[in-house]
Amino acid sequence: MTRRFRLRAARRLREREFEEAGTALAAATAALREAEERRLSLHTALTVGGRSVRPPTVSAGTLRDAEALQQGALHRQRLRAELEEATTEVAARHERVATARGAWTEAKARLRAVELLHERFLAELAREDARREQRELDDLAQRRRSGPGIGATSAPMSGGVR
Image 1 (cartoon, one colour):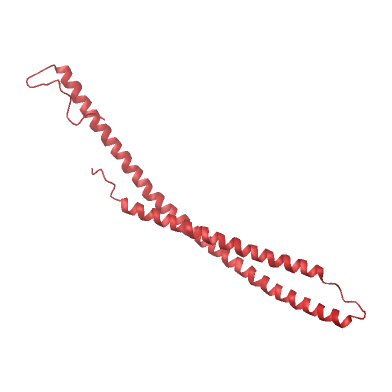
Image 2 (tube, rainbow, N blue to C red):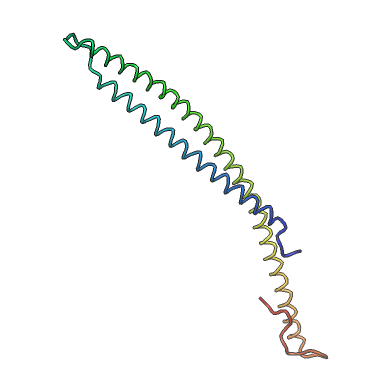
């Protein structure tokens, strides 16, 4: 068995994909947060603006009050339109976050699959090393039991024991 993991390049690729998916998810989440803040800001402006407009009164400045009331109504109408656009944008950003989260989850699963293969590979190497070490120890014990024979030396085995 070769001591080099053959899927090393695949693992690096999966790690890179996972990192990129994480970056995309973070960016989508930040964009969603920004869109939600804008929507909240518009909602607050519309709510506060609606309360600050005085009801029409009959007085000497009725014409001026009517113009102010009309401008206030136009402003609220514009705010409502912007709020509707912001709400649509928030919904679109939620979809982007869901898509990015799905891509991140898939990338994580693909990376985990290669990691599991790598863990199995390392475990097999450890078993192979343990078997080799056990064989060496068995050989050493056998030589000691049989005593010094023809050509036997007391020098340690080459390669050493880990």
